[in-house]
Length: 392
Image (cartoon, rainbow, N blue to C red; front, side):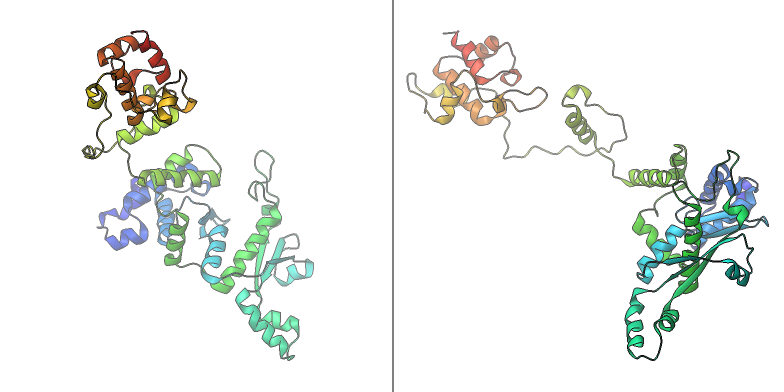
């Protein structure tokens, strides 16, 4: 699509790129439009590029149907306007709230007054801005005007029209396609009337206002590459938009380290065997161990072996629990974690003290329990003591 940016021989200024998009961005949007936009099917690259630049100059995303509507009229002219969803958000965010819109279908004589065919479908929409209600009340209290006159002073009005051939058009499958799925054809004509009322009252959003709304909605970070990924899924319009937003969020999210990924995998699978994941990771320097957190003892404490023979160990509630053959369930070993009694410094200290009083050293403990380290033993302390008592 080199023709789409024929003017790229001229140097691009930063202001030009900001207003109209870079040549690369226009080319990327144009390629996607050519593949997925119905209005672009019969256009050449230069025409598509012109439409893309026009939409980007408005501050809108050409592929977001919630921001902009693009279509080709009967004369073959490409029409571009802000979408209904964006107009509603713009009015609520910048202009204030209004009363519930009232819709009235035009009858025969009203259609004639508007110069419309008698078989056309047309609705008038009216509403009043809530900020004007207090002024309306003051005028009515003067008794100088009738309520209908006061309302006419402040009422905002718009007209939505659909010709019969458009309203009843069908696709090649025999289904009507005038309105989106889940919406009636009347709904679409009414929304045209509401948007027309907004334009009569407020005009159209400025580029600055559109940029502000896009930032608030989280769509300002979406790139053509995000749209390409989302469009390949084949979801509906709303689903495609959410996929594109998710792709943008993932691209801007900070990368995690290998250790963070491994911890997350272990939390999901509760085992180190599936703790390897694929991905792009950042390298971070290894932090030195905290000085006031010494490693867990694997050797018998000195006081356990230095205690004179025959001197009884201090007995407390913990000793009485640990001397039983069975320990409470919360002290049992859980494979793949460190919920083992041997990782509890207090319980481990008690165990080696018990071994020292019974004349059992570390080598005998490991041989009797069939481990190379006490941390590898998977049963309770009570069961370990039962096995070690057989040595005496």
